[in-house]
Image 1 (cartoon, rainbow, N blue to C red):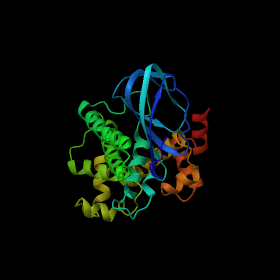
Image 2: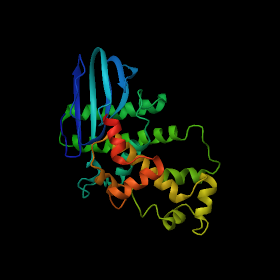
Image 3: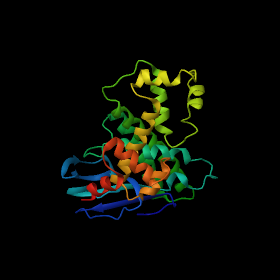
Image 4: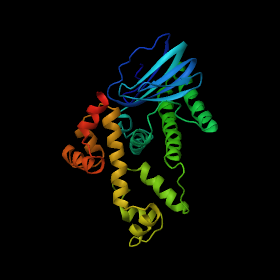
Amino acid sequence: MKQLSDTFAIEIAEYSEWKERNRKNNFFELAYILEGKGLHSVNYIKYPYQKNGIFLLPAAKCHTYVIEEKTRFLFVRFTGNYFLADLKKTVDYSHWFSRLNFIIGNHTHLAGELIDHPEEKAQLKRLLEVIRYEYDKQETCSAFVIQNTLVAVLAVICRNIQQRAWDGRTFNDQKFTDLLNFISFNILDPEKLAVKYLSQKFHIAETYFSEYFKRNASERFQDYVLKSKLRIAQSRAKFTDTPIQEIALDLGFTDSSHLNRMMKNHFGKGMREIRKEMQG
């Protein structure tokens, strides 16, 4: 795994037989199949893969590959500090950290391709080919080009996960759909989740906002935000090795005790219990 910066790592590897890889302290990893075929296995449920397949691998040890033909992989690892790196760079990546958490919290983590839609998959493939080219080229600006391309990669993944999350659910008000998207992708920014800010941005009277949200979502705004954060916390407990206290603080909870209390209220289980079940 070549660490092109302290925020992300790229690897091209070839296997005739899958070997367990050290992937601690990262949110997740994209696997792009360059050549070969076999089976992608998640919790003993298998799904066939072949050239141009794109999969998501959480940090937890629940993914493996059964290789039928020698396979070359392009791995893109997203680390915990990916979007918290030097904010003085030309592009400010800090707000993209929410999208990283959105993917962890809303992806099914089941066996199968990351994206089903042919055009969307083709778009993601084009972006990954840019990463592959710059990885091979290894010129002065290659790391910068890769990092900027990863921003687009995450945007495409988020868009598709959001569409899956809403499968079968429609909203008559396009403004409300835009509002939900904005909340999902800014879930870690308390200023942008303030009712005053959202009311101004989406041209909704502040005194009417709560009623407007509940009428469209069939739940209170505060409950929707809390449950969104708890889904992320649940997935990070299952699929990453991030300390629970760090997860709590990242998501805006006072401490791990506060997060555990909220998890038990909504899911009937605390963070440590959720993590222990996954590890067992």
